[in-house]
Length: 301
Image (cartoon, rainbow, N blue to C red; front, side, top):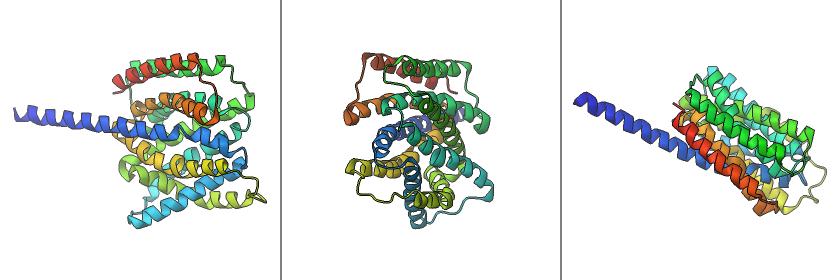
């Protein structure tokens, strides 16, 4: 009876932890959904290299202040390779590739590629995180990604080969950064991981920012400054606080499937803020991906 009670309590604890992971993951994805529309606005007046360096530098300085204020201990030397991979993926690679891509494609078109991010994150979770989802998980993940890829291929929003390749590269490095950072957050803590990754990249990103500094800011619109502020504060820091915690609590491969909803959150924001058209095809694909998220969640463990 006692053993049964202990087992039952453990099951309830795991269920609560998993639920908390999905809630935190959803909040993180909702924040990230505004990243590409904000980047699209920012690159109209700001150089992509400067934008990438500036957002990382601003977020790194805020992270340093946060770590000092809360007296957080330094990561171990053995954590540095994982922090470097995290920084390469989410601090440098994804912001730079997306900023370059958004000079050639619309935010809506770029956002659809994010539908491949859950599958990419899951692959890196298996390779680096030691996770082993059930076979039906992969089926739902692949089908969900196929929905999004089909929408991108059949959509009439305009295409650019170079822009598409840049977005694919962004998704690959971002999946690596998500999985690596989530794996490390199990021991280091979610917000601590992104904070230390930002600080690790600062010696590179600060000089990049200064070298790419525009000769004048007179042409920069208020909307571009707001875009920079959003990607620096929310996309680069606050979103990761929720995201890495959610991945650590609920499982990288499992909670990563929430990203299938991100393209459609972002498309809604693109339609609202950038006045891009929302089609019936997008709504139907949204329904399909929501079902895939539910299926992937059920068979993730």
